[in-house]
Length: 542
Image 1 (cartoon, rainbow, N blue to C red):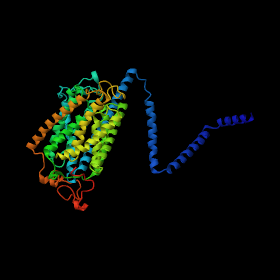
Image 2 (cartoon, rainbow, N blue to C red):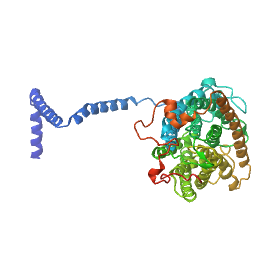
Image 3 (spheres, one colour):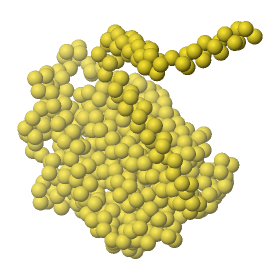
Image 4 (cartoon, one colour):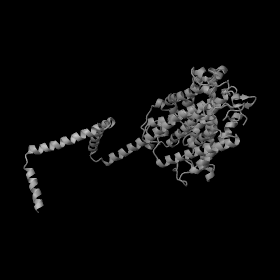
């Protein structure tokens, strides 16, 4: 009790002290605190000192933001609209990111084709792969997108030139009012729709570059790319993705095995055939190996393309649907993997060595083949589709070489042949709506495939689509090639081809100051390897 009284007395005495005295005591404590703080700051490094005002600013801004968020409770209607806006924003973001991945595939094509060809043509190939997307952008913006997705008839669109016309995207279904009704199923702005479809169109043009490499005139390739992206590609694309007659017939191609890859492959095949083989490629009926000059960048190109395909296939959902995006990504990856494994085994057995170029093409073959059925098949069937594509591509490359179709990078085998196989795979392996995996609903995909008990009803439209798209593309691209051949001439002179297109067409070298090839064939003197083929050369006799 005495102790408590003592403390109370002390507290009362303190209360009786003059205010100035108590203030002086407080000032001394404050001064001591800031002195110690100043000494502590001086001991810090300049970097940490600079962080102090930034930290103060962040804390103040954070506090202000917290206060600013104390807004009145939103009405139910406003909350619903906010959720809709958020959904549109997320879908748009996903579509744009996927488009960026597909756009980056241009770098993959450039690296792959350059590595597979001789160094004296490296600048030419890089220039083609760079400028082709710029040309594709203009051609598709001006007329291609309207022909492909504009409202019109069963064969081509007649509205939406230069991306103009009525459009109230991102409204969908019956709420959509505009001239691009074929895309009213995706709830993103028109700009996002165009961007995603544009990068696909650019891919179709890039496919042609590799097949006609090392002997085509630069100007002719540019003109042909404009014609392909502006006319040929969008017309057949309208048949399938633009609500045309093939779509009505039950033809399905989720991400473009036919729409993109087969069309580019057919155009490449006709270009390679009309151009003729490279000088020295076939001597006395025997194919002479002309190995690529840089397999390192070819392999890098393959990996870039593999990455880009995760935008190509999953991005074709054009909406954030986590389960289906994940499924498509998995089918895409497993098909690429089994394609590469199959090509390695077949090349090792058939050619005697596990040839890197065949491994690369096997991976790409699996990717092309799974592009059409990626959303419609289970993982085991995706593995089968990729494996078969990896086997096909090795024999296809050697077969085209035997009939003297000179394709330096194997573009025709990868994109045309495996694109056809992937399109057929839809009719063979599709799960069907409400199948065991319940991948898609009624009307959102093909009926059950032939090998899963669905009969020929799903396979027949696929065959019709392959034949009709192939026939039209062969016809129109042949006309384009022969018009260019008759007017400008599509092939460089023999002297320019021997010298290399880098110097002849562009006046520069890709590897200035480095050792060049020793002869016109683009290969070093075999004597430095003891008179035998260089390591890594594929057999020229097959």
